[in-house]
Image (cartoon, rainbow, N blue to C red; front, side):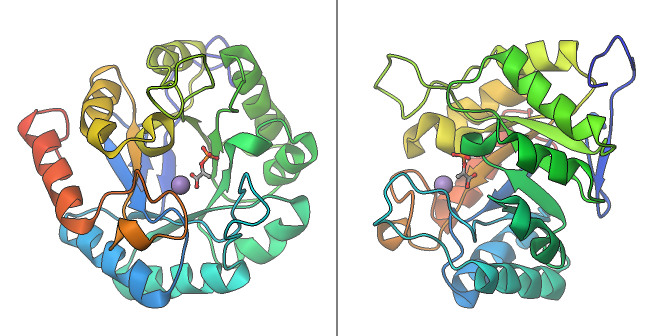
Length: 264
Ligand code: PEP
Ligand code: MN
C-alpha cells in the first residue's frame, strides 16, 4: 500500500491546513520535552512569529535511562493543547503504548511513533485504526525496507495519513549522535508515495550541525525538517546538547531562507 507502484502520485497529509508533501517544504519545531506551560508558550510564539504552526513536544518520553526525566505525561499533552489552541497551532506528540492512544487523541493532532517503537507492531496496528495522521520515525537500527514495512502496518489497518521521518541510524561513527542517512530521503521518496521528513536534532545530536543537515535534507527532497527548540537548552530536562535557543532558531530559519531552500 505504501509503494509507488500501487499509487504513483504523492500522498499529501493535511495537518489542520498545513499540507505535508505538496511540494512546499515545512518546518516542525518545539521542545524535546514539554516542561511547563511557559516553556512551550515561549517556543510556540517564536515559531508563530515565523509563520510556523507545526508544534512538536514530548509528553511521554522514551528515555534510555529509567532515572532520566520521563516526561509530564497527560499534563504535558494538556499544555501542548492549550498553547496550540491559543496560537492556532498543530500538536505533534509521541505515544509509546497502545493504551495511551485513545486518551492522547483528545489532545494531539498528529501521533508520533518514536524510533524505539518503529517495530512495536501492536502499536502500529492501533495507530493504523485511528483517524489521526501518524508521524513514524525510523528505528535506530532499522533498514529502509524495515521502515517501509512498519509504515505498511499502519496503512494496512486503514490509516493512509502517514509521514516517514529519517532521524539518523546507529553506525560505528561517533562524531554525531546518530548518522543522518541522507540518501534514505530520496530512496523513501522513490519507493513510497508518503511524505518524508528529516529530524536534524536527533540525527546529528549537535547544535552546530543542525543548519547544514537541514539544508542537505531540503536540497535532497525532504518534505519537512524537524528540529528541537528550547528557551534555555542548558537547563532542558532532555536533549540539552542539541536544542536551539530562540535566537538560534531565528538565525537557523534566516539562514535556511537565505539559502533559497526554505521559502515559507
Ligand atoms: C523525539 O522526537 O522526541 C524523539 C524521542 O525522537 P526519536 O524517537 O527519533 O529518538
Ligand atoms: Mn529530543
